[in-house]
Image (tube, rainbow, N blue to C red; front, side):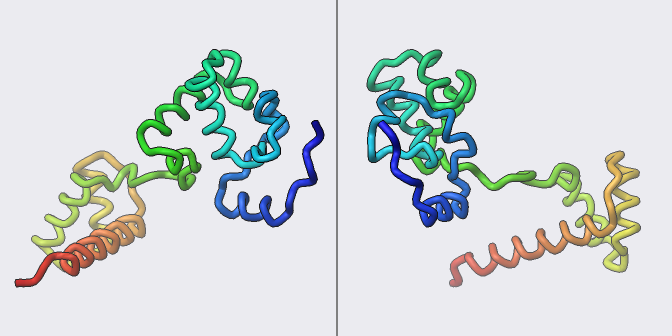
Length: 164
């Protein structure tokens, strides 16, 4: 059964929400492709239907995963995400690092302790102190940005606390 032309507005919406399936042609599951409701361009729908086919229709993972354009390992990761967070967990997350890799909590505590002892310390001196104490090479500007983030977080916490 031939699919109708793809709606450009829907493609734009899927792209903006980062849920556009990069490989819609890889979705070859017969039940999925036969349905006028199901859309191989909708990545969340493809992932959900793949898990549903395994769990409800009892299709083996080794057959279902490739029919939806995924490997078995991806199926298990997708199923775990669905179990943990529901359908919204199938939406791809923000790309890139999820947190600091060098200026972690203990490092920033050390930096703040140094600043408490000597408020006149500048970012280059703090970066040198981090290198000496932790063996991490960090750019002074990274230290400045981390301090700003820490202060902003602390300010938000103070605004959330109930007043008495």
